[in-house]
Length: 277
Image (cartoon, rainbow, N blue to C red; front, side, top):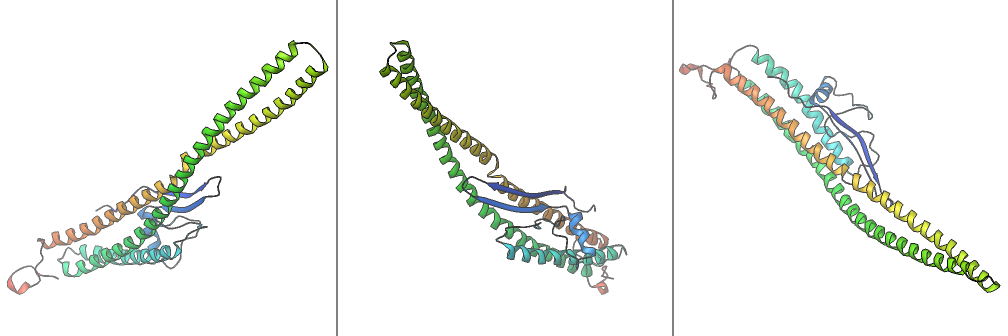
């Protein structure tokens, strides 16, 4: 049977920052079984923090509020890697004899699958905790986006109002400029000129606020669920990989039973049946 494999995918890290200081940082990888199993040859040497590592392994973590769960998952992962390589070699060597040895092969497979499930449970627990954490943050940022959009509408309306005020001032100035020239008229024109300058400054400020709000909204709309999506993809990839591993061991069980010529191997050769060697 061909070894289970999935496409290598890894994510260096995702940083989301909005203008109110909400920061969400998760750094993680999704990796292929080839990388995971490569560690089995030298399990005592940990992977470098900056290098790829098995599914769910953290890389250069700056903020990991679930570090304890990560460490537990890693310990069970290391145990599965060790058990898999040891038991796979024994199973394959016994299958290679072409003798009926299901009584010896089955416990090895059962031990490996048990270790796999123990790792899976801890790995999924870790990522589900992060999923819950990021879901809460995403909801909070979504509410902030709604607030930003409301302020954006207000800024747009205020800009229009200031534009109308400025147009009114300009019309009054033009009317005065067309009328008789005298000290009173000149004074009023000067006052209008000063008022229009202030109004233009107000307009510039409102326009700047509107543009900043628009930029913030666009950035948040495009990114505030990215980490959450990546975590859920990580969970999906882990489950896919675990399913492939279970299929690998199930096939080894089937291979052993096929050699014995029955799905339920007999263990008492004295009655004429085929027994275990």
